[in-house]
Image (cartoon, rainbow, N blue to C red):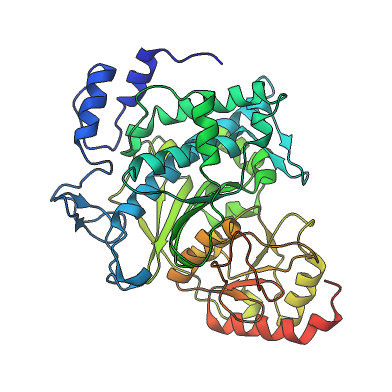
Length: 458
């Protein structure tokens, strides 16, 4: 791995765009000592009345956090999640930057592709970004909550990287992680005092080995949801959620390729990239890429632009997102997975017709489907897995709470809430998952499933 020089690290870490410090960064060691003296998530000034979406909250140390649930603190057991929410949003912003770099390298014929695409034991694709994001998120969460025992449930393990054939791949992952973490101060987070080595990265990945369950607190991470879309230059998401005693209390979705205009969802990202190159957007415009987030019980969900695209961390101009008000199936748009391996397009097509849906389905990779419904770009998401496939909690936790707080409904096909308290799988799931923008559409879909299920081949 090409080593990063100390001066490179200091220069990158000093680019505090959007971070409340205008003073030039001193030498690396002195800057690190100063960084330890300030809060890990930056306080907001008294003049900043708008924030992550709701207001401001003063912590027990006297610092003001940007996040405050406007709906009160009744959600998630009545406790304050300002620290957790701000940290999670910042961490996902950092992870999006790593993913964008790796995806760009995959799509450039002249580049080495960051190790290209590899296959897991189940033949699903995995890239440097999957392991890199998991290591970055693990390290940043552990550092931000260093006084607590952080528990993380995540998709990837280190088996491939630790194998005798994985040395070169591990080197690429370590390089991607260090290139990303050196920029953490731009997002109001701390960088390591020195570059992480291969052992450090492996340990960070291994730390994400919790199995969840009904008690206690744990984070749930899908480092790159929709890896197939990611390697094809299309939609994907970074999904991070916090679960306490089996309940999802907050969720954050990073969607680096999600266009700000609904119409662009119908186009393949390669075409969007081509058009962007022909007529590039002005610097600082919010043209694509976003992070969505919500806390249980707040009754609101929010969206902010990516730092990578927007040029700075913009806490003060978020957009509140809400589900669509469409309740007539004729006018509704429904989403379904692009992949056919773990879902039945034929069953959802028949179901859509029986309910009265007439629009062509919007087939989108990853949890971007949840984002589309939360933002009002679509009204229905249906997924009915083929026999033998079990849904994992990291594929749904963040998206579910965001849709619910944006005004939507998410249940299994029997109308029951999804159960995140039974380990890494959504055990007890009744047939499939239905997410809708409103109760009327949801009830019609559930009734249609009951009426047609016995004739299906699932």
